[in-house]
Length: 271
Image (cartoon, rainbow, N blue to C red):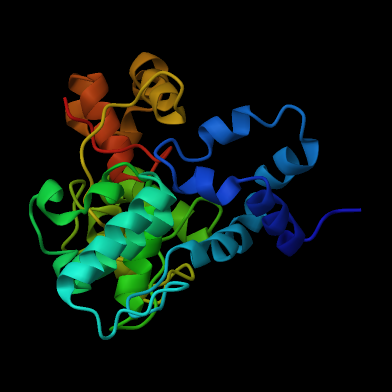
């Protein structure tokens, strides 16, 4: 009997999937540790349950204004609040998505989140090591506090596939379909245009939170995807890549492109 998506989401969360998903390596390292857990591995492979899994895990990132258990700081002065937050960061650990959300919300308003040009001046210390899923949840929480709910498309969504096609092929084959956009436009800009036109069941995307650069490392899926593109992908499907990559396919440039199109959770490279 096939397990329901709700049951799969609960199974993944109980096995530590939410914490792994919010970490810097995403689910790649977590997947490699499931050799003795076929039930968890099976749930992880079900793309149709991705939405239920994200919904189950989203509670680890509180929205601005939400309380934290045992936290009553309404009458505390700033120094007391700061000290209490620092203690909670140590308790939760530097890689905790909950600690990141808690400290960010306490240390600055959400409007600053999408305006600061320098990442290290914007993100509190605990947020500099969390993964992209965690930052997306915080972005969604901040965005929904003031505007309509947002959701950046994820792999498995109909919207995601259409955005990727538009970025990889559509913009070069039919640029007239995407006024104001180019190969340099972000994933969120393409998704926003589809949302505005009511296409492909796309929601309004959450504003992207810039994060520190990091070159992919050997055990990550991003590294494997970059290597494949450099060795085979660009030569076999040059039309799916920007012309600059076709002419000079360096690892750093390829990783930057994969980051732009939201492939393999690739961070922006430092090279």
